[in-house]
Length: 101
Image 1 (cartoon, rainbow, N blue to C red):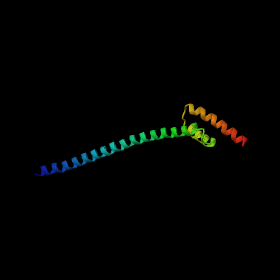
Image 2: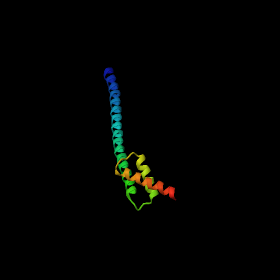
Image 3: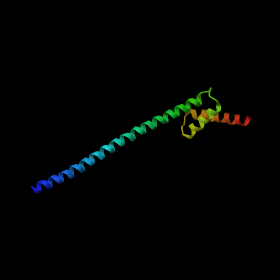
Image 4: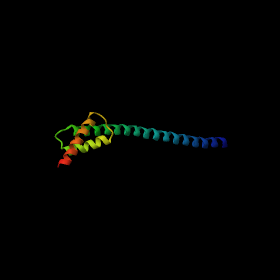
């Protein structure tokens, strides 16, 4: 009878430890999924920012100073495309405008 009671106590400890390990694994899996979701959101946000800056840079109806500020942000983010060339032209115009006025 004592052996059965002792086995029962060990069984409780073992099942408790297994339950804790399974719970920890579940939490880890959940947090890992959140991280992957956050990475995807950050990538989409980066793309949205790039497209918004491009929209400002290429729109000739927006004041030159606003376009120059967008160019500064665009170039500091390290984006590289035809928009980079457009930014260099805008920044030259902005510098000339600043000197003349």
